[in-house]
Length: 320
Image 1 (cartoon, one colour):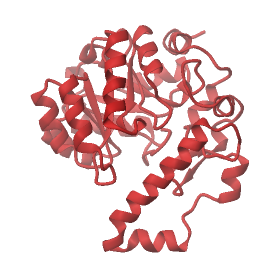
Image 2 (image 1 turned 90 degrees about the horizontal axis):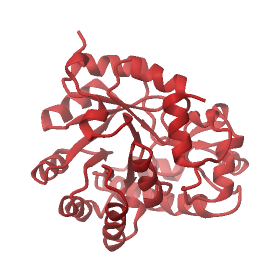
Image 3 (image 1 turned 120 degrees about the horizontal axis):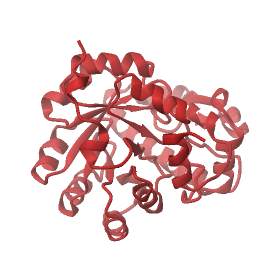
């Protein structure tokens, strides 16, 4: 039986008007977007890895706090590929961000440190087994990453995953993936989600700092143009199937696969692939050519124009 009736909504957990987190998007999210999200009645979040140095990371958090009183979060990659993880976690705790979203690793250390600082921790999960593990570790909520999420998508559809997680866990379930319009917003909440983590449709926002070509790609391409690639990080990731992506393919080559399977080399190769993918994504996000790799999810199907974040939120919550 579902435990959902006993669980608070994301609006209650964070003290926000609408139960929405603007999802942290690698090399896309910026401080202007987080500030605008807060003003629109939702919570913005941003990956720590969007900043090359700890100094830049600290300055970004301070800028958000100076310009917004709304709660916001930081996404931390908590596995060994993130060499800055410990410093990033320390910074989050020192500067008192409102919550941390953990991805790609064990959140145990993050949860312990964050809770000491009075910071909530939400953990990305794709199945019940991992969700139960992070609940035992003290996670405040899980982010249920479904098969329509942008970036690193999960294997299950939203309804099935939310239902399974609500039945198995006592903590709130925040759904990630597949929300691009008002109807989808209402539908996912009706499945028992405490709130929603929504990313791709905010790429084509006026506050977003990526290239005009990237934003226009989100308008002009649709769900059928989203493909999985292992080229960027070694882990399957959703991208827009531009002519360039078609040209380079979406599978690692034989050498990449061999190195990825070697136990001694795997850790370092994954880190190298991640770093190399970061550089490619950085060029893609801010370059002005379609010879690039742009992350997005199938919800770009609902993106019809480039608009301010406030307008995107208004249409999501209330419809047109």
